[in-house]
Length: 427
Image 1 (cartoon, rainbow, N blue to C red):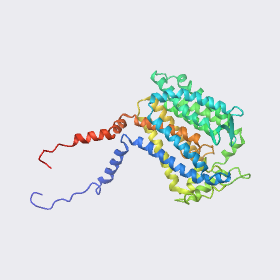
Image 2 (tube, one colour):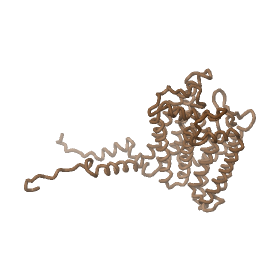
Image 3 (cartoon, one colour):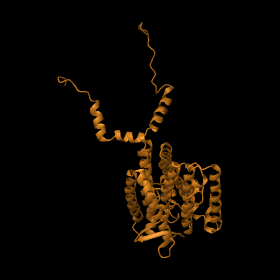
Image 4 (tube, rainbow, N blue to C red):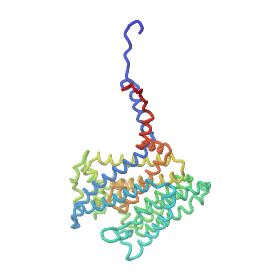
C-alpha cells in the first residue's frame, strides 16, 4: 500500500497450491529432456550388469564348490564376459547405422551356419537335454541361438526399412516374405535342439517387428494363432514341457518332485521378506534350488535382497524398456525404429518370461534374465544390443546437439563468449 498500510504477505509457490503443480512441471520437463533416453539406457543397463555380477558371485559359490572348483569360478567367467561385452557395447554405440545395416547379412549367415553345426554329431553338445552348444575348448562354450536373436533383429530391421522406402509394406507378401520364412528357419534350427525357451523369445521378436511394420490385425492374429497352435503341439508331445506347464502356480512339490524348482523358487522369494537375508546368506542355493545362478537367479536375489531388491531390478528393466520405446518412437529413420523396437521387445519379453517363471505365473522356459544371469553367450549379444540403443539415442537431433554443447571445448568457448571484458582500470 502507498499509504504505508500493511502489505499482503507473499506466498511462496512451494507452500501454496501451485507447489505440487510446479514440482510436476519440473519433473515433466526433466523427463522430456533430449538426453533422458540416453542416460536411462546407459545407467539402467550398467546397474543391471553390475548387480548381476554381484548376484552371480553370491549364487554360484556353492555350486562351484560342489564341482570341486574355486568359489569364484563362475564369477570370473562372467566378469570376463562382461568386460568383452563392455567393449562390444562401446563399439556398437559408436558405429553409424549404415555400418550396422552392412553387418546384418554377414551376421545372419554366420549365425545360421553355427546353428547348423550345433546339430552335427561331435561338434554340437547337449546341456540339460538341449542340443544347442558348441565347445570352443577348455571351459568356454558358445550358444549360437543367442546370437540368432541379434541377427534376426538387425537383418529384419534392414529388410523392413528398405521395403518401407519402396512403399512395399502395404502388400502382405512383402510384409511376410522373406522375414517370416527366415524366422521360421531359425526357429526350426533352435527346436531341433529342443530349446523351447529361446524359440519363444525369437517368436516374440518376430511379432514385435511385424507390429512395428504395421501388420494388419487379421494378419497379426493369424500368425499368432499359428504360432500358438504349433507351440501347444510341441508342449503336448513332450512330457518335460507338459510338467512345466502343470507347475504354474504350484505350491506342492508333486508326487515325483516334478515341481521342485518352481516351488523352491517361491520359497526363496518368500523367505526374503522386505529387505532380504543379506548378500551370501541364501539358504536355497545350498543344493535346494536348481540353476540358482542362471534361470533362477532372480529368486536368489529376492531371498538375499528382499522385496526392495527385486523391485529395484524390475524398476531398472522398466526404465530400460521405456527408454527403448522412446528411442523407437521419436526417430524418423525406419531402420532405427525397427531395430530399437526389436531390441526392446527382446529384452523386455525375455525378462518377463524369466521373472514370470520364477514367480510361478508362467511355465519355466529356461531362459536367462538379460544382463543379470550367468552366461557369456547370452551376455555378449545383449550388451551389443544395448550399445545399439545407446547409438540410436545419441543420434537423435536434439540429443546430438545437447551432447555437442557438453563437450569440454564447446563449453569453454561458450563460457568465453559470455564473459564481458572489464575496463582496463577496473579490478
